[in-house]
Length: 307
Image (cartoon, rainbow, N blue to C red; front, side, top):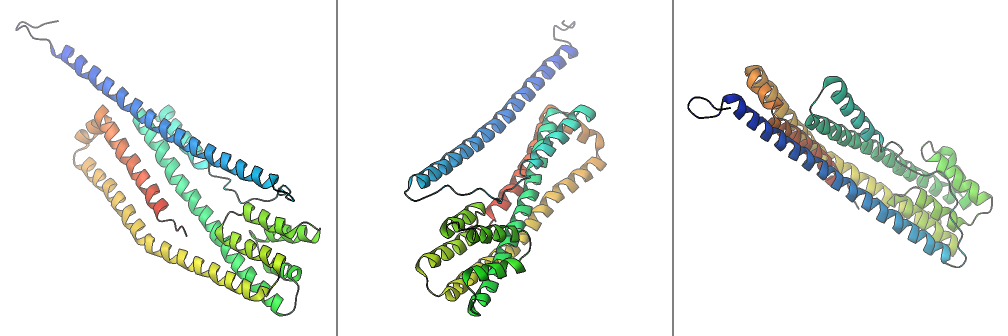
């Protein structure tokens, strides 16, 4: 439809702009979904390679003469690693179904809740590992005192087990019980190191296995192992205290952006509403929120001590 001057009327132009906006929004949505699919595929590929490597190591150990399969037992697992992503998906779907949020905000909410929840779950797992390492250091001190007083290795393990608490106590009980029932001590120590995949437990079990094979002064060996474990714990605490300031600064800066957004909303609610409801504004806002969540996750990942 044309006007008297020969130009198109405003509704036709508005339909063209609206069609271009919807096409742009669809392209961005496809791009976001493709990125998420690539990340998921990469993560799955890494998990498959790790599982294949683990199976190869187990098969090579079983083919060696005189080896037996490791007895299954209590393992240190992150049981709730999938919960944050499930909660993020449920919250995002609830916002889309009940509130009618745009797909851009739905994707942003799912990723933000999943990433931040994963950081909380990882923090809880690190606290559990730190508690295990601290209890292991205390147990080694008890074993040193028991061996110095004339107790046998089994008696020292029993003394450490009696004075320990959860979460370490069940592992020590299983280790002492298997040795008492006649299992190969080297296999028992190797099984403990695989069930608790921490460097401190690998150091402790390796020292115990070597002493069981060749003998020697266990007191000096455990003293060196305990000192090394406590040094690692102290270094980890110092690293965490140094990174806490940078983490607080990052969270403060992110909070400042939301504070500025609230001020802009109060000063001009209509322009702000037009921006966050437009196709371009929705994806800009959702993208910035997702990048902030990824930044927090990346910062926590690079600040994790590895030594």
